[in-house]
Length: 312
Image (cartoon, rainbow, N blue to C red; front, side, top):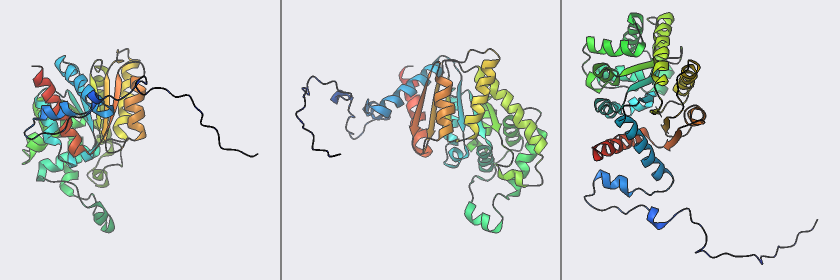
């Protein structure tokens, strides 16, 4: 078959008559010396994520003002990038109702409280078998699991407090315990370094984290009109959240209209499906924000407090 160049004798339209998705009034405003943080937020373009970020902050602020449940689920990288004090301040301001952590987040948080530092050189430790073999970390978490009369998160916060760990002021677990903010820790056996140690009792860990799952189901059951934020957990917390939501709905709780968001350096399948898409199909809205936690979490916190205080 032979093809000849097509004629481009097409019908045209006027640019002035065409509908535009972007207008100059939506553009970002240029920076100026001495501008405030509120000025910065206001200067963001009313386009794509600039619009969605402000919209999400507004929804979160509304939930806080109305006393709705606001839950933050976080992975270990959020703690390792130093976001504990930022999230603790939001707890102190009443902007976070509950925290959910995977096992890695709890481990890093405990190490920060113990020695003021965390995060080892995994590649180097793996070469000689020393990766994850810190005795104090394992003894602390594994003994907390054995001592837990309720959930794992509460037991860890209480133990940090009772032992007076020297850097506890930087700990999310301790700040949540001190402020009465429900904190749950969701562990998959074999995924955390403390499971490598002889001090680990799988039955005790299982009981403590299973209790936290049931507590988390109660938290999710109260999420109508609230907000759930997933910070840096690609697998564990998105899966736990989906199961908790189906338990809540199965038991007759009306959890249909709420806001979700996923903040991470890339958008993984499970957070998108289990946090943003599936839970909000019959109500609410999900937002995806891409960026480094050490930038995005402070940006969210500052923006939220500006929104709350600006309406006060």
